[in-house]
Image (tube, rainbow, N blue to C red; front, side, top):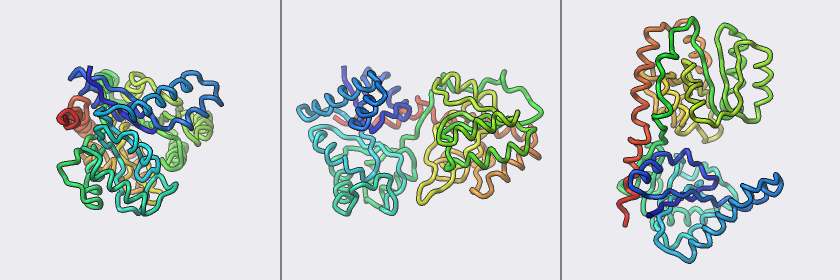
Length: 356
């Protein structure tokens, strides 16, 4: 059976749902391997985690095998200007490489991996993307435009493949969405200041008539727990990995909150939670960052706000928003989400099958 390999720092299987769908449809095995070996090996020993320990030997064997084999199709997910590309380029030199990225800043002003970065490494990266990679799959149009503008990569060598969701799991359950007196709000994601969690908690602690549910974990977990204990309208469900359970949670709420804050040049990129929520009839309210902006059409299928206007928009909705208007936007959100199903996005990955 033919195989395609995803070689990623930490796996990120949720980013490749549509590729998996495409592979299954064409009788191709999709295999996941990771290159963050030494850190995870140390973690496995410290935690006495046998599963993680033996997983690293599988990753090591795969990398060694790459050196002595050829013509494997490998989708590489690695952050811009990561120095480990020098090693990976060596082991991948006889294989067909496809680069997958969500990064949308390619003017060298900001990059996530700063260790050992210099002009020589940047030049090495640019040469790799131009000459060694067969095709680039970008998660957003903004990422594609940046690559074309700053690295002068030909438009035909980049395909936009948005993240996707399984519409057999994430779907609108109208039976659970009867009209309620108060709109129900939901946050799903990392519990950090970067996500504007403190602002959200403060608002709903003063507006006890509006229900708020939070799902996820992070450095602010203990703070969220305290608010949930002190205020009856705030509910914390912890981290939820079960997709079906998450779909049920979406279907019990009306609005999704994404109050992300720009830090330096970073901004919110393409959010899977947004398309999952919209598919379940949850209307998103998000700060006007690059990712949400590619998904949401403001006041048609969701809301985009400036960072300093986010809480004001939530307040306006809790006090003035009429149910009939909400239903219209909700229906539009469900329709918009259909663009991001695994079936639709799998078509965008088709280029990987065309390469001999």
